[in-house]
Length: 114
Length: 112
Image 1 (cartoon, chains in turn red, purple):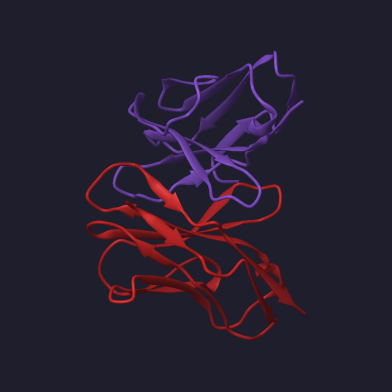
Image 2 (cartoon, rainbow over the protein chains, first blue to last red; image 1 turned 90 degrees about the vertical axis):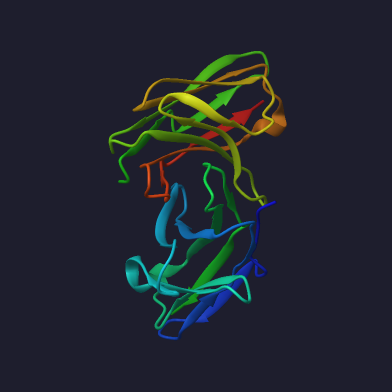
């Protein structure tokens, strides 16, 4: 069965500092991994994905994530946080063998302080 | 603006009412999804349609009835709901082979 864990309910970081939002997953077969962001009163917005290839993937707004197969992790990172990055972040996984079912984590709230 | 619109944005209904949520995508995608988002819980996949055929039905109570008349439109028909059905209902779409989903802004449903 597929599952996603985001171990931190909230991450606090000062503006200008690097940020990391953690995600670990479990899936049979090759994983398709995603990060989404949700701002207040909005739907989820796609940030980046890992399907195959380079373990470091770059996405929107300066975010990147590193796929680590041995640790079954896909942590989201940004070198320098902005106050406007404050939002709810979701990690998601889909089994790469086919099908449409995507499992989402519970979300991590990122708070960037000025 | 993601190219996925949902109406209404807010809905208050009694337990005996019948209402429908509408989703429309202008992205040329051929898969559409309904999700339920409740506070403090992960997103719950409810239904998936691919090429207008239902391919996922995630043990959703029969008081929720989806309809996909074409690849651009998706409905969620609601009847005899319970207060615990109050949540944000999100619609999403995806393109074959691209895997990521594009979400609408959601309908905030309150059942009284």
